[in-house]
Image 1 (spheres, helix red, strand yellow):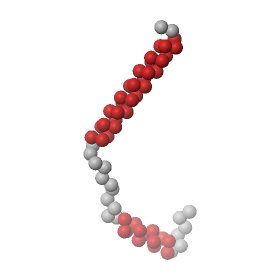
Image 2 (image 1 turned 90 degrees about the vertical axis):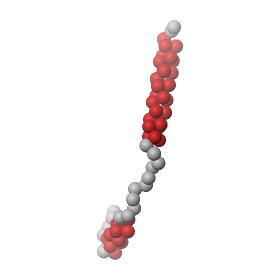
Image 3 (image 1 turned 120 degrees about the vertical axis):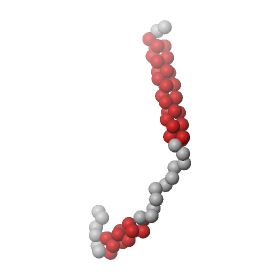
Image 4 (image 1 turned 180 degrees about the vertical axis):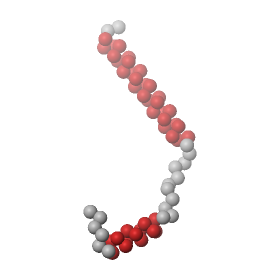
Length: 61
């Protein structure tokens, strides 16, 4: 086998291994269950604080 074929076989094997590792990672992450968004119970307090800062002339930038 010449050098080009060896490089092609090694590259193909690495590609297949990376693809299998990716599929395994996706399966593990998917197995964790449904993604639940973070609670937004503190949102009204944060909005009030932001409105207070804006009304007092606080410059964000």
